[in-house]
Image (tube, rainbow, N blue to C red):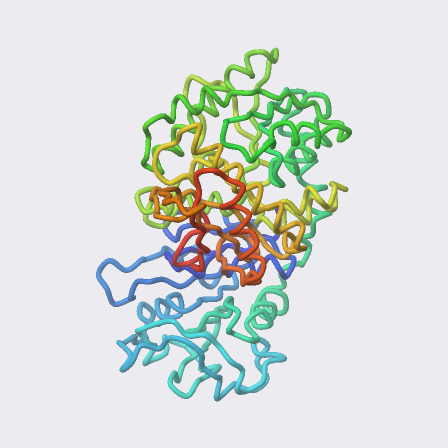
Length: 509
């Protein structure tokens, strides 16, 4: 994409939110670790430095090379970035008397500043730092203050460089999006041309150029990501796209046949492969979640390798990888600090000769849905909840057995069908059931039972990077709990997960 905004990641939990806010302005942006960003910046129109859990005064503080950026491209430094510019450019950063965390209000705004156009004094912002700029950097000019922070915002004369010690990307900064718009559109003059239709047009052209007359095999899952990827590829290469839907034995109840039926009439060439026994045998006795993910990823690749050999001269494997997968699998500290590995991120083994194509790699989930709508995909399919690539394996805590899979499939069906019948399904971003590795005492028909415990999970989110638990009606929870215990043999207790992301993840493993 042209007219990019480069966001440098220093390890802040809010970095992804900056990208979300920029994308909402119809401006394409990319996140890169501060110590590993592109050497060619000719396509970028602006740069944003993110926050960080580090102190600029610490010996191990992130130290970016800004020589190709500062003074050459418009730059907005957020929180850690603002302190970094001061600390290493003639200013002073010191520990605050008290940790400045939470809501604050702008008590002073310099007049006639484009950055604060449309922003009134007393506007609420969100602070999250224990250091503070005490002396501005060389040529620094104060733009805004709060009651506790004198240099809440500043700019550097002679450069198009702005710095703020609060987070405009979070919901609590009421005019944060306006400030980002002022910087990117009015100051940096970045075009607002990142729309679903523009993405489709550019991606189809890019796929045609990249793939030419090559054959591509794609793993369909029945979910939004792989479906949108398939339709994009189909527009680009038509009959040269071969879709394979693999039953890994860890799908939802009856999902294998239902998904195959769903794709009828979409013009896609889809083949179903039932490999459930192969996956379950490989997973037997394995309890560690990362090991389970890696086994599923490996077997998934092996199945695809087998299938690809049946397609003459196939050269590419297409995947529905989306941006959160990429972000969560790469961190500023390297792979050792990742949250979790994703089965479709990280390349293919050497023995598999296919090259990878990922048309959705730079999109967040909500953007994938909007692209799907522009492609004319059925709204019901686009509205499906996300379902993890490793399937129910990461919702069965501990080892996997066919009996546990059967129990969880039956429970999940009761839960999801209940959400739909109560008109709640479309109000939830993702929902599922988790089979816990504990038994609990119960009473059924005057007899003691000692059976499985199920946790139900339902969250609200925009893109999966952050999520809040959904306040489902008590009446619904009572009904679905009763139905699960009565209809699914082996379960005698149901609990509801009320943790948000962060600190918890959406899935339990």
